[in-house]
Length: 289
Image (cartoon, rainbow, N blue to C red; front, top):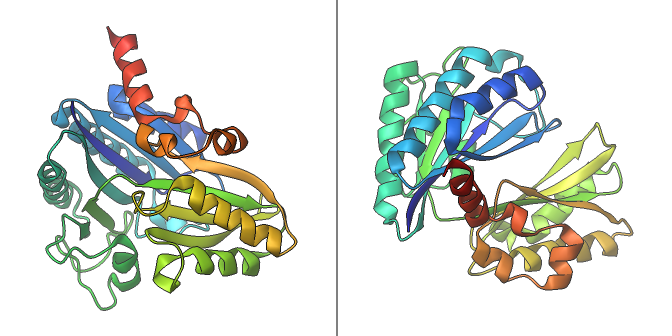
């Protein structure tokens, strides 16, 4: 089965009316939307057996967000380059990885033409295969945009567009207001700082909950499973004398990644077939037939 996925990160997580309009713009390609008030961010998971349907939905979502959101009035704990902040394309199942790369570059060229937004390419869409964290750190500092204007768009900022393998985004919330603790633990599990292979992590404040969070992107699922990453964070939290308040998945997860977890962990974390990428696709197909 061939399928293309696009996981669009939008800098809006508080205005219900705006989010509803963005959902509508995605049409049937929308499998999931995860929204966080403190991050002031929403992650839209789009997918389609026909790659053009996924690409069209990403463009429609971009148009809708561009007309409703102004980066100048945005605030939130999550780092961001712009309104349509990150647009990665992912080849699923038997789809050649080259299709995701082609889709990413085509989208990047389109968004520059349609909205005059500077684009930073990453992953397989970038000739140097630079990472998303690298793009964030160097954008407009030591690195010029790969496409588009040299300066951020006045209301939309900039966009990071990439092609990448499957990854899982998951958060572990800590039951206290101690940002230094969250950042310390994030540093200990982060691959770049000598932590777990294939794990990127940051510590965030969650003001509306009075808690903090260790936020992880597991980009090397063949190296570190969801359970291994979360258990290590849980161990470090317990070692500090704090406790885990919640484990929160962002978006969806492939069946293979769920199968790599123990039954006990799945029950404890609340992960089940409802968050399966494949199951969401199947349910959509059943509902449309």
